[in-house]
Amino acid sequence: MRRPIFYLLSWIALTAAAEPLTALDMDEAVRLALENNLDVRIAAEAENAAEAADWSAMSNFFPKISAGVTYLKYSGALSSYGTGGSSGYGGYSTAGPDDPWWVVNESVDGQGLTGDTDYENFSTSITLTQPIFNGGAVYWGKVMAAAGKEMAELQLVAAHQAAILAVKQAYLDTLRAEELLDVLRVNQGNLTHHVQITQANLDVGLASRVDLLRAESELAAAEGEVITAENIVRLTRVNLADVIGVELDREVRLAPVEFDEPTGPAFSLEEALDYARENNPGLAAVRKSERLAEGQFGLAASAFWPKVNLQAAYGWAQGDNFAFYEDKDYWRIGVSASVDLFTSTQRLADVAQARAEERKTRLQIQLTEQTILTGVEAAYMGLEEKVAQIGVSTKQLAAAGGALDLMEQMVAQGLVSDVEADYLDINLAYLMARLGEVSARYDYLAARESLASLMGAIEP
Image (cartoon, rainbow, N blue to C red):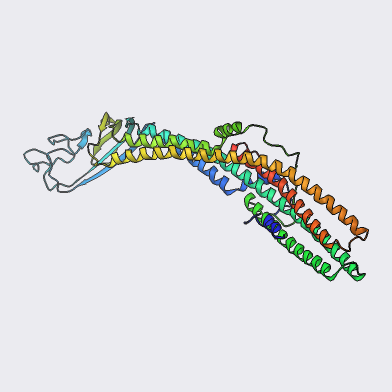
């Protein structure tokens, strides 16, 4: 009969910590968790990175300006085409006296430089490049970045709500463990007193040796349960500290949670499901992944289109000295277009892969929605069940308490000669009812927060 008590206690939980407090309530615990929880901090940095990526994608629509300096060294080159010279506008077919590398009597039929001439060439320019059309690659890149930013924002909200739920559950688990420990200590005290009375009755012949041995056995079992419960309290405090992200001293006092008259949900199941469809941040984030998959497909398809860019440059004269010649500067402007004619089957494979990813994403969205809505339905019915269980546990506690009070009156009147076994059974029934009532209350509070979390409505 002791096993149900052990199973009732042993499920309450674990892990580690960090910064001393002396008093704590649930609101303060949530506030500390939102400041220190690593999942929340990671999600916040992911949002910052997504915002930067979105701005980076936006910048691809703007022109790029670059400055260029070129140095070329020629040695023993035979050229029938000028390499720049003082004109600075490109090459020309016949070198002349104005060319810095013109050497008298060393040209070949008057066509450029001889094959044993060494020379250097410098050029300087500033170039502006503006994309005109690239098959939609820039557009789809911006679409993907915007979707990634929205997903990161929703994931941060989801991380906040998950942290709030984790703190509230850990806080309630700790309060539950402490209250169960108090109940078991009271039971230990009652059994200690009962052993003393049984010993006294044995001394005057009103109880048997068997009665005393059974009373002592029950007391030993109660002492073991107290030790187990004390360990569970320590574990739940460690878990609470881990979730919050700060160290909790052993003596820190947790403020109790206000417990009103338990009531079922104030809305219908269909309303709860509709609310979750609209407000659950995890579901909303997964839905954004469809837009991301569409962008990946558009980006893959853009590779089949030509790329057109506008390019304008302002340059200074090219020559054998690094200098800026104001009287011989120049402008250049033009449009370039290019298209890949053959890339094997790589781009077809990229498009096929993107299309498959798009279909997979839609299926994942459906699966996520089914999972979340199933969870909402289970939590909704679970909350109704917890309300009913509180009613039942309250009745059981009242009945068991009444029986125990009556038995204690009989003990006080000395009517214990043949009812020792009945007393222990009634005391055990009262203990189980008390433990069940405590657990029912905290189960109700936890179920209420779980439903709120799945609906996307949980608050600090």
